[in-house]
Image (tube, rainbow, N blue to C red; front, side, top):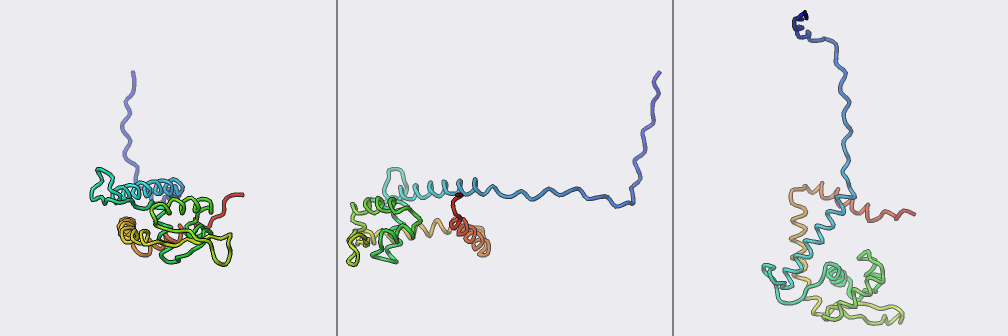
Length: 178
């Protein structure tokens, strides 16, 4: 026959201090994943904005004429502040390879947004000049950029935005692994 045991009474509270449970280390954000994902989202937004501005069917509020790509808009913005920049100066300002800038500028010559001319001081160097059709693109590019920057900054304090900007500048300055 089995014996029944009486339930044990709850233990009296122990007056000895309990050792704290070890805290889990704060998990660091997955920065590479977040940065890559954010870059893809920005490219999608820029593509949608470009389609809207260019008059792609189905894009609300679309204009009729072609608009610059994000990279082409970057060239226009640089030239707006530094008209007559060399190809090397554009490459440096946009953080692009010189060969990429060459093709970019060549495509921008077709719609008469920019013009390449030899440098009077050095025939091997070409300077790029902003033409009236390119300058006419700037107001709507600034409006699109202002909308994007406002959306990106929404919900963040100025101090947080400065930290993000400082971190992104740090990333820009990292050297590739040798």
